[in-house]
Image (cartoon, rainbow, N blue to C red; front, side, top):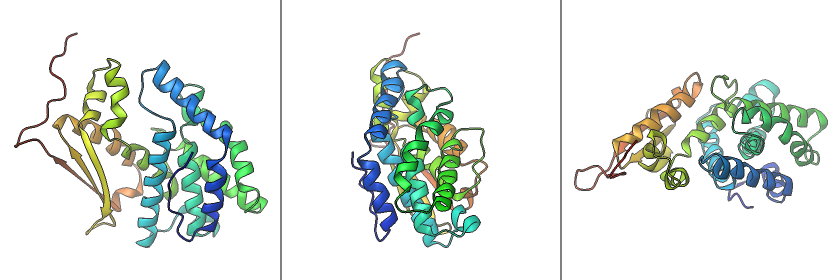
Length: 259
């Protein structure tokens, strides 16, 4: 499994990335997560594709913020470096949903014990025991804090939480929609044509969400807005939503619906 994350000059991230990409246990958990989420629950993808997207978005957000002078939690609290914060964000992104292999409900709690042995063997060769313990603590916090109702207390955790919500392009909705799940979740998700992340003017980051139908507002309101609530990221990120219909008309997503 390849993530396609640009490591730039971060040798620690390069080392961790190589190990994770070859980890068969993690890869199998991701496959099992999709068996549970898609095959058994008719839910959207929570396996390798979702993980790759979230990981790349999270690293991009972190780098944009640190370039703007924002200090990650691991740097502020433990004196680590930005490169270590990238390791934390990547590992948390890679393992935040593997608890789906157990069950969708409370999957964040299940992800914690499943992630621990993977973290141990991933970090042992590049960090001291003290450093790896700190890294693990920060990764596990970011995993548990992507759950609604739990406040993320670090920049890294906030980034993973928001990156998870930004994987909202319409491809995520096709499996439940094609399986017959026609509801506000699947219909609104099909309206999200694109998610673009770029540098902002008033704030470091501008997120532009392109919709083909105004029903997609539900995704913004229920997913992205709620994930950003109670985080400091609100002061660094602007969100712009644009509806692009054909010839001024919104795209029709469904033609008929019967209860």
